[in-house]
Image 1 (cartoon, rainbow, N blue to C red):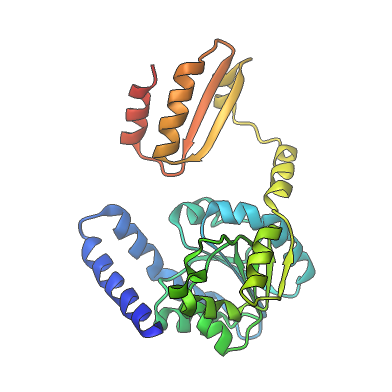
Image 2: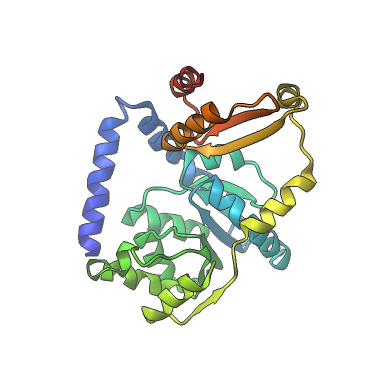
Length: 278
């Protein structure tokens, strides 16, 4: 199965390199990852100890942030390398107070995973929520690097708990410990013979509590809001926006205003949403 997976990744890479000439988003996706290894070669020193933290996007970063702060405090003799898979997360948090270096995660090919792990040689690797990349996990296991999943979330319908997902479930054995959000996730892992798990809860709650204390004001939004109550829909997708706009059109009151902040900024979609708003 690993051979088939690597063949699949190889084909995907070929398709992406062809499509990048016709699609700006794909071009950006490929181009952004070109510098990852150069950045690591310039930054990583054999005399330093590193912790590698990987998140998919901004949501996982924010969710894990309370934990990252504790890690940084406990391991103050280590440097932290943070990787993102998505462009939106990287662009918004490439400059942060947690990591010493922030990079894009390369595509999960055999070569990329081997090179990435060997360059960093982390003492600890931490994944957030549900990022499972077989080749990266394989080389973490090969180098016997303690690997942890935090704020883990598992569902009965996860494909790697199905009969055909046995090879992926095997990769989960790389994790030294699973820190999961709830009893359902823990029971599901136990049911599949993973006893190295604990319930940590959902650190999003800690993050939500922290945010109001920052008291960051955006002046032009304050002017827009005025004395009205303001409802904010953040990181929305097109399906969300259709429901939200329908709700707005049925709930307009003089003392209420709405802000929709899409997950991906697209001027055409924003214009269409404006036209949908009556």
